[in-house]
Image: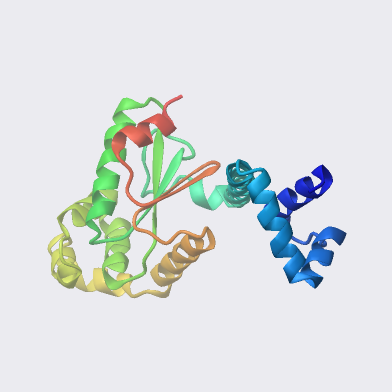
Length: 240
């Protein structure tokens, strides 16, 4: 077999780029399956190391494609986060730590144990990293989340934090919320108000627009993190 044909067949073994047109050699061999089989057998007998070489090249190409896809995804996430910066990192009464815009926003839900652990670890980090501010946003508009937001409005963020810390069963959310206020009727009315519902709906929509789907999830400039992260990992991301 000629060296030119060996090289040509070797190239045929590699995955072609998307949208690439078949070569004349490939078309010729496709038209003659017997010739294809004959030439491929001869090729492998003459150069048995070719299989390993082709596999290596294929792995390299797939890794490069995966890296390119990941880079494109990261760039897309960064662009979306940059566009949503005011609503993502703007200071609200629910935030904690230093003054000013947040360095990280935690999407959380009432009655979510991993969310509570994540919040607790972030609170600890605000005491360890100077200038760190954390914002909380809701990924749910369930009744427990509406009650938590109403408590924050009527009784303050510390009371809302106690509610989140003590809530283990969302079915008991109303009883727990009523125990934390002197005016349960007003609290329940506020929890069902159009204002609270719209506020939570906007945050849930933001969570989904970012492509997030796990509780909790974290957002930093240029980075989305799905699922609970150990404190040491967050510290490495947040430390200057």
